[in-house]
Length: 538
Image (cartoon, rainbow, N blue to C red; front, side, top):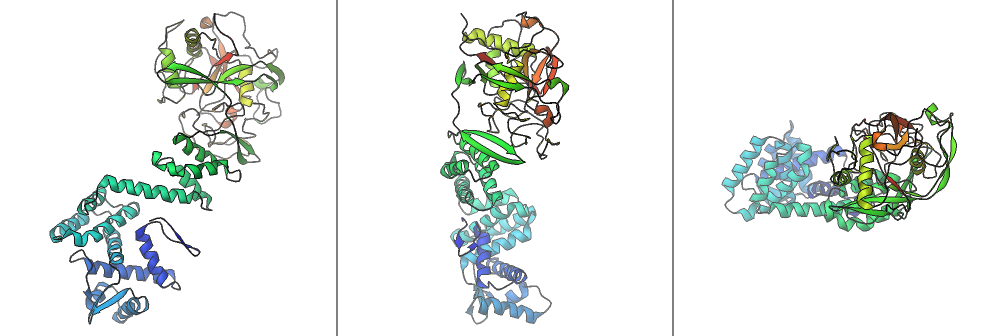
């Protein structure tokens, strides 16, 4: 049953709790202790009314008195009088017999009594089920109780650790199809979650959005409300981002989400996705390239900036020409297709990654492996692909921002995958996932439309390593120690950018530089590719 409103009171979302709520409504002035006593007394009496035949039947007042435990018999009489004369729950049906006034109420109260009494005791439940079989000459007469008991077990199974076989057996005895019952439950659950999307409590809205992501396409009725949440500028950023994830699971088009953190407060903006060039690699695998417009930016970090390194200075102005960059780091699915193309200079392992997943970034690939990938893709498509220069990478990552991250002054684990056990600036500690995440899974891009530029995996750049920017190119080209085009034979250290899932936030800054040898590989290193706009191989 879905929660409904009566006056200013929100009724429970399920029938067992609704029955108890109904009892409370009969004596609204009663305190919690008195309500609890009424609940317990009626559960015991209800069970006494059903235990002989499993269908509601009158019992003697003496039986009811004997069932209620109290040191004072006069107190028991007063309890029964209160239930009978004040609340009108107990009906006098014969001179010395009473019954619960509504059969469904009796059945549910008896079910709650058994759940509370037997809990996780498999032997007690087995004995009950066996007794039901022996006494059930006419199943139609006790089907109401079986359904009520099943509903109570289903609702309270987590609280009381009800064994799974109890719920399954009750379904069979009530002649209900388990799959139809589960489908009905799922439908009711979805209705409730949709209602919770409009509640005033933030935690309820957030929980509802996240739960809807697990309900599959059956949750499609939630699409209009999810879209309203996403487009509501007054809604908190986390709920809007989770709404976008849910909509994407329902195969809905969503706008590009750009997250910002100012003074520790996260907000998001929505804009149209930039057009992308889609490369069909075959086997239904697509590689998207995002056009990056030319511009001038200040590369590096000021020496006064938190965590800045000598290697990030001196800051210098760099002019970048138009180019295209991979929307995401290269995935394992994309790697596998290209690794199957004809060799250019070296062999490539088809499945090198430690953390498996078609949409996770490929890792455990060396700089030479990444160059071979680009060479094979170039030969296959007749368009020149390569690793980005270090300047192109930082320009693309910043997307015209000047803050440590394209998100702003700090970063959170709700926006990127990194080791969030330590903070940066006004940031907060968060989740350390200890593995890569599927590319784009955070659903937040920078202003250029690029995803996962901070964290997840380090990304190889084309440049040779230099200890600082003294003498660095200002035209956006790769800084190479010589102009030898035979990249497959290069030695020494090369540049890595972006940080990874295992690094603290400071290592994921837009300006942070790292290096390793050309032949090094690890489970936190991947890459993304670029191509010069309009460059076609002859």
